[in-house]
Image 1 (spheres, helix red, strand yellow):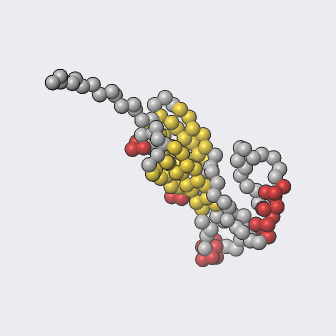
Image 2: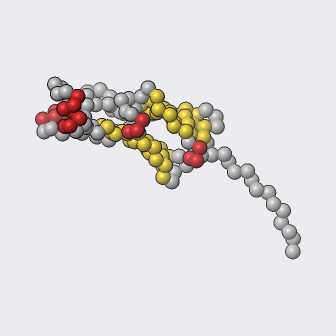
Image 3: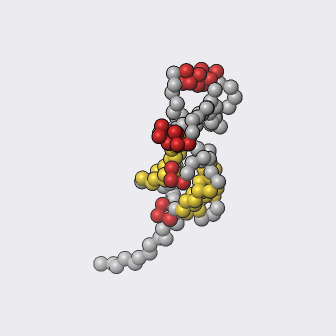
Length: 144
């Protein structure tokens, strides 16, 4: 039976989840649902540093999109085709097929034009500088 990542909110044995897992295996459903990656965010003063665990992904499989005030981190593995399988040999057991992760974050207080991303050893590190508050504009009014 395949095991799944468990969010922090749901720990322990879950009989219904176990039955769904069995049903998926029995009926041949091989795709893993989209889930959130485990993410830590640190405040370093003038920026935030996000570290997301994405083990087993290649850098090319990870996408970071910013639309408005929403930053989306997504990653997806796709199952290899039959042609690729035959070149590498015959599988005796295959548990890794397709998986995807997705995390959405509010970045309304982030300077999105200066984001920096790095991926090393299965961890995506995203440095997000904070927006600097606009300096109050001072002006003198002319009296008429």
